Image 1 (cartoon, rainbow, N blue to C red):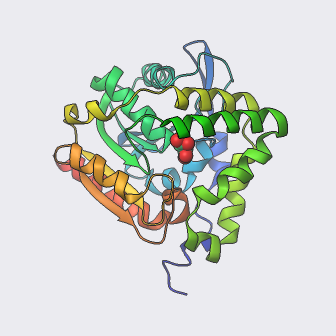
Image 2 (image 1 turned 180 degrees about the vertical axis):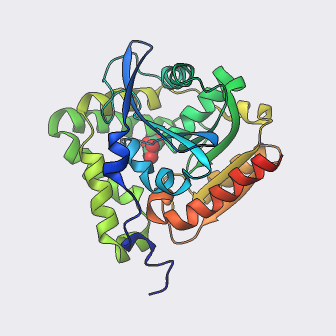
Length: 286
Ligand code: MLT
């Protein structure tokens, strides 16, 4: 097994240190918990569904020497309150208000999957706050009819059987084949995060995703540096989706993380961090 294959066998986070620094901000009628660690260029890490800010521990703990890493729990997840309204626009407004509350004028907005939908909503509603974008394992389009039907199934599953059942239903799609075969501890760790989500948060986010607008027309307006990253084995938002984003966003950079699935940053943190670290360094040089 080479160093890259084994990278997740080493502890990459320092949770006790980071959890001590979790803070709560009252924004837009909700309490948002967030980590705010490190110094340098602010990076806002926006988690996917149904995750929480701890998903980004392998990034924030590795990149805090050069960046101010701000990782919130979206409303309804982690330690944030689960209160309506639920929409991508509301999540984006929450994050803009969070930046206000901590005195950050502009941040690199890095979103994974649903976090990418929110990053695009931030671009739509608060573009002056966006220094650059990292769009990881995400897409611009809205849900298809089939997609919306599956969302209703997720809502019913959450209400009837709880978050553990939703975690089990999501897990296979979230994690790449290589990770499933070689790193069961990573799969288990991710499952714990998924299963800790509240039913209200799951239902709210699912409705928000189901009703999100098509962000494809927005892509040609993006004029900040943009990194598109995707796991080679991502089956939910495959590399073909990443290529569409890359093709539509002028001057964007596309990187594929080998042997990783949808949760690319969690499955292969060293590779992901290297790609993002280089991107962040290029912004400082601009
Ligand atoms: C996510 O990882 O955030 C979800 O897969 C997004 C989605 O279900 O569309």
